[in-house]
Image (tube, rainbow, N blue to C red; front, top):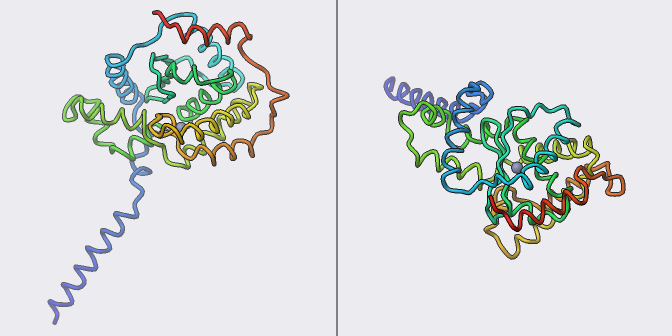
Length: 267
Ligand SMILES: [Zn+2]
């Protein structure tokens, strides 16, 4: 009988241990913000090494200068320090943009082509800037691939190129959790309004994405940013600066030239 009770207690003990393990918020314990800057930079470099081998970076000034002007003005009006930010435009028809660890933002030419005006493009840029400034990228990676994989990727023992590629796929084509997306949208609204740009254009872009979803479910920006229809509504509900008060950053000439050059990229 005694042995039986002991057994029951042991089972209960193990059971509650599992229960406790499940309750522990591992992401909070291995706080992504505690990952050293060097580790994050190394991780960013690893990703960039792989991307730059697979994709073609656009280095043409007629494209990179106006894009940088958009970033600089937005950062300036929001007092964001982007001196360490690396912006890469890649020649790729997919409508996509994503942030990498170590202060890097990737924009595809497909995204610039799909943006009907600079307000739409600025909306997506602000959303990605928000992911960086709110430290969402490492939170997502720690949650999906685990801290130990991140560390082994950057220390060179254990994880090989395949693991890095897998992790890269997570960043470029899978969704952040919904709370992080909402936070990035609300922060983007703030950034846009401080730069005197109306977030209504950002809402237009998200709405367009939700319509495109009907015809092309594989569109990357949609798979990495789901629920476009709900998000459109949430953006509009939180917008104070309407379109009639919107001010462009680039002149009409600069914007038209950026768009035209995106169609005829020659590096
Ligand atoms: Zn996002």
